[in-house]
Amino acid sequence: MRTLVWFRGKDLRLTDHLPLLDALRGGEAVPLFVVDPYFFAPSRARELPNRMQFLVESLEELAADIKARGSQLLFAHGKSLDVVPQVAKALAVSRVVAHRWSEPFGIERDRRVAAALAAAGSRLELFEGETMASPGQILTGQGTSFAVFTPFARAFAKSVTMATPRPAPRTLPPLPDLPASASAWLGPAPTLASIGVQKNEFLTPGGERAARGRLAVFARAAAAQYDEGRNLMAIAGTSRMSQDLKFGTLSPFAAWDALREPLAHHPKAWRAFSNELVWREFAYDVMRSKPAVLTHPFRPAWEKFPWREDQAAWGAWVEGKTGYPVVDAAARQLLAEGFVHNRARMIAASFLCKHLLLDFRLGEAHYMKHLTDGDWASNNLGWQWSAGCGVDAQPWFRVFNPVTQGEKFDAAGAYVRRWVPELAKVHAKYIHSPWTSPPLELRSAGVELGKTYPRPIVEHVVGRGRFLAAAEGHLRKP
Image (cartoon, rainbow, N blue to C red; front, side, top):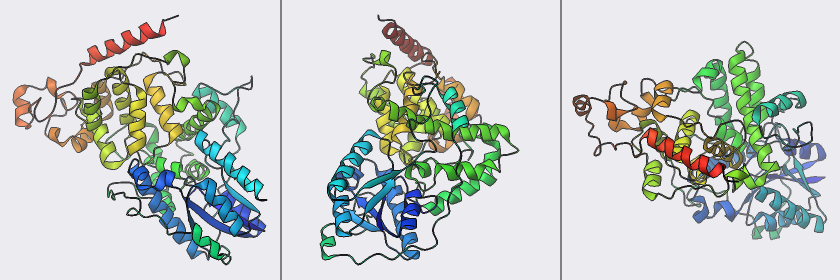
């Protein structure tokens, strides 16, 4: 039996790839990737350059790994709805196998592709793998989806059996002869040049090999202190595997399995790390059960919330010129590296939504544009949590103080000094609030507020009070 294995951008690996392994058990496996203009047209790709760079690098390695095993990754150019049935017909495959997607547009795409394949006498079979539990699998006692993380995590622990990651196949069957009609859809692998994206040397490198390297480094170094180190913005205390899980260069089971034994004697670190993986599961579950969260607040009471419109404030936040050093460091790290430390993300998100009273969807879209690990479910869950309109017990009236957050989680100011170099010589005592520094000390550090570095665009007390007044007034409406 000949099977088409459809790699789809969330499973760019050979290790622990269930559709591929299932196809090999049945006979011939033909690897396929669709270069869909929805993502790969230059006008689209330039709107998410960092993710596309990671994707192109990962595809390059995947193609090389498949070739080294005796086969070839076919690149079909065109819309998935059109070319997948074309390829299936041209190669006379009996079925197409792929990993399931949970995003609404992915579900609709698969429905339409499945219908087109069925009409032509083939079929689409979807496998779980983007998450450890199928979205919708974890339910309350009443059979409904969870809206709070902690009970979800308890239910997850009771109901999910951790699978051992499957090794990559050592060999793959050679491709069948391609018919002349293949020229209608067959094309070259995408490159950064072909999609109009300029290479960013500061991005996390793509590919399964780099992903497994990051996992190994984390397991033997920072993992044992993860419960504390993950909050310290100036150190390499996090796993840096979020983009690997997003693109599937690493399966979630592989991440879980690789850390379970090294952290056996570090229960706090294991609890913190495993909770992060389960939080990702929660994000997918929420999106699957309530897809409207991608465009609307999770909590209906937050519809038509009185967000402000302030282009100057928005521009300052995007460019890292708010006058709050840790907020500005987060903004600049995003633009430079396509990554933001998770603690800095929370501080920056809280500042945008609460101090500036700007719609969380603005920040969510900005992060999705620039994050290499930009994931619809996780990004949305995080932004709604920070705004106070999402799931879980995060109280909407909790407003992060960017100064005290910086002092607590970047005590010496190393994170700020790296990303806001104009403050590099400011004393640690004042690095998170340079406006409180004695003028002579600021001058000796080469800082002139309002010229070399901005004054705060809003006072903490003023911003906090403005948000609380707006929220209380809105949420108390009958």
